[in-house]
Length: 257
Image (cartoon, rainbow, N blue to C red):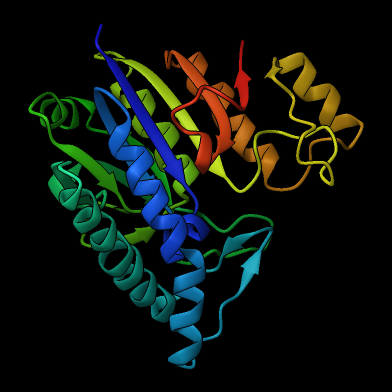
């Protein structure tokens, strides 16, 4: 099987000029087949504020009402996505910007109201068309995936970028030897959140449960790691959590079964 790298980068990295340019250089240098999945939440929050639209978050997830959906569609599918695509083209990478609605590549269902929380127009992924995506990749095209999907009935849905990266990696695992890399500001999963050098080099499900129980791993890192273990169980070759600056180096936390 040929190797494929799926890189997920947070909005913070792609929204600031210096870190974006560095990321594009590093991503362009990754050999072989690759996919980039990006966020863009801070840009969406900024534009919403300029338009007088209040941004509401619950447990770190954006409540997406009709006005907010317009903003995230413009920002994620337009501004952020096309900036990345143009930057990669300038580096000789034949990138193609995609939302889940393009070519029906990711279909979602609107999240039901849970425990009294209505997230609005937020999608939970139902399927990824790995065959179609794999055909594009095999032709030398590099998909750049925005965190938007659709329900097949004409509605765009705001969808968590970590989830899109995990589901895309799973969808391509039958055809490629997939490495999924989650990039964020830190060098990996940390034993001590105040010590950037305290990276946990590898993590099994048992260790994960232990670290969650004693409070070492908490907050947004918990769903990120749950996504990582699910991806491995679904056939993804390896999952790494690291900093954007280290995407080509193999450094960070390696997630193992």
